[in-house]
Length: 68
Image 1 (spheres, rainbow, N blue to C red):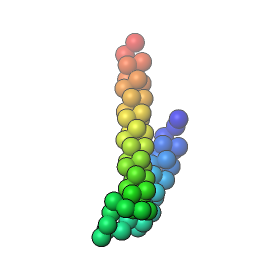
Image 2: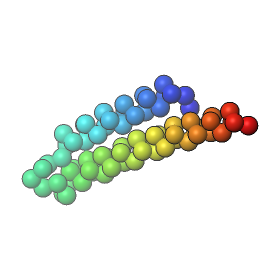
Image 3: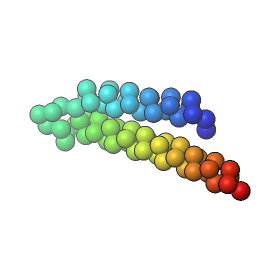
Image 4: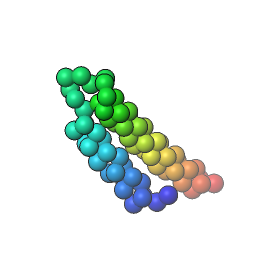
């Protein structure tokens, strides 16, 4: 997975977070569609974290290969 694709995935996840924030009813955030929106926000944050961990591991792998 190249750098451009990871950036696109992160941007898409941020867009999903922004959309889901608009779907939350802040008066009652744990009922109905608000719960689904909260789950979507958490899932998008998890996707961003996984992509960042993946990119970091690829950088470490390149440095290790350069040493050998």
